[in-house]
Length: 167
Ligand code: FES
Image 1 (tube, rainbow, N blue to C red):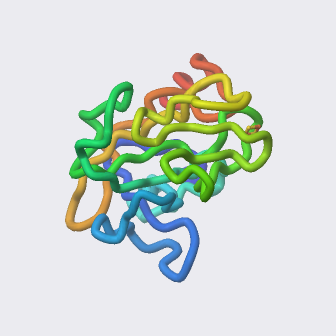
Image 2: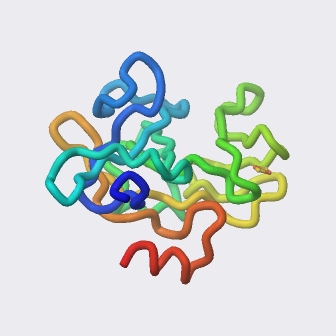
């Protein structure tokens, strides 16, 4: 169903939790801490659909001083320091979170997997086998819009599963 399709170009990112749940992200409200979001696309009749029927579509979005964002982040998918990734740990699929004791990193609460969100969410600790894939975005009308799909499979999918899902 449309609610399970991964984020694609043109999807709008909406808050996944909190008082503004389901409303478009406001780029000006993003911070260097995690904001959880869902992609919102359209069904075949053109009606908006929040793609939360697939829990692995959950995204995390940040806004950093642009100069802090470094390789291997795909800078073509970043605008004004706003960067988005899969929010699901690549180890066994838990939701990643902020890391109060080391705020420049994010942490998976399940087995202490750690990622660097300023550097392409590369793995910097624990068992995750690969980085969190990045969702390329641009800012649009004060919100955040996907300009493509995640640059790799989210948790639990092989490259070939992922390619067939995007076809
Ligand atoms: Fe994230 Fe194990 S599920 S570290």
